Image (cartoon, rainbow, N blue to C red; front, side, top):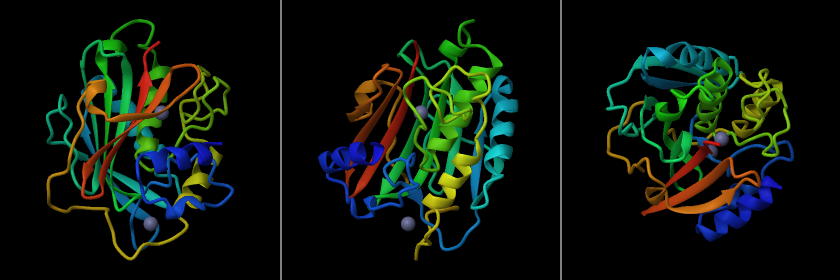
Length: 251
Ligand SMILES: [Zn+2]
Ligand SMILES: [Zn+2]
């Protein structure tokens, strides 16, 4: 179902969709988006632009996702203004700030080139909501942190109907859905089974397009979950450059 949805969405967005013939096991990848790399496991740098209230969750997500057999994460001190959270080529920026009452708890944006290759990832956690009692729980912080970082690898959701698969990539309120599960690691192995002749991982120069904090900057909405808790947007910047944004809406 996700494959079909993405095929339609991709056609709409005039993406190169040659890679959509993905393995049958690829049931929660995100539009076949992936980091290009020439060997596995590959090491992605995650830049820490978060404040103390998020540090433990970031550290935990880095540790848990690094258990994947295909990728390792290393943390470095971030240098971007968290309010802007500018993408840096070749790595993932994680930011938190009070982004305002704009309706979303978390955003994961990936810069795409050449149809499917991720060149940068940014995740933003909105303290405007996480300072409210209904969101400010260890489970919700862990769930959203883990999920938005998972999106930056090309993972989609395991479900959007509120059912629990006991993974942070589901859309449940299950207190056990705060970490990756075995299926997520298998999914990563599927997404990263092939090798590329080029690499988008690591340091490279150049300025990448960014999207902002408001819905008006994210481009076209290509998917919305039935429960209105989640959306996917695509904005085209020309020259084959896209920014795809996964949105976790507040209740
Ligand atoms: Zn590839
Ligand atoms: Zn999501």
